[in-house]
Figure (spheres, rainbow, N blue to C red):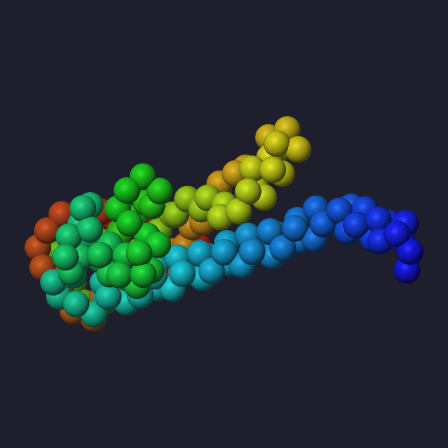
Length: 165
């Protein structure tokens, strides 16, 4: 191999490198987004189960200890928290009649704002002229039937379950 061919290899490498980095960033971003989606989904399911099985597990806007939101936060290993990027909604069927009783449906819905972990979403947003958002919402909803009576408190009434029925 002479001196000119080594220079050609460097030029070819430099031409291919941006595409290789783009693929690596896309794989990393997809993996992080998928992990976040699975975590939000599992935390929501666990929070609904927590709400159904405990007689003192009540909703709390501040994620108080042992609340339904606290359980979702614990099961997400710190991904979900009670700030601007996560919205928790806990609703009971027929809650207007007082404290929900055994067999009453409880619905837990979590909406989490996912922001990209790599510069890829921002880069695509720049190239596409703003058509691709740099962050997006991931929503999960889970419902369960109460196995015990819930202690008295303030409850949000809900007519349906997850899925809009």
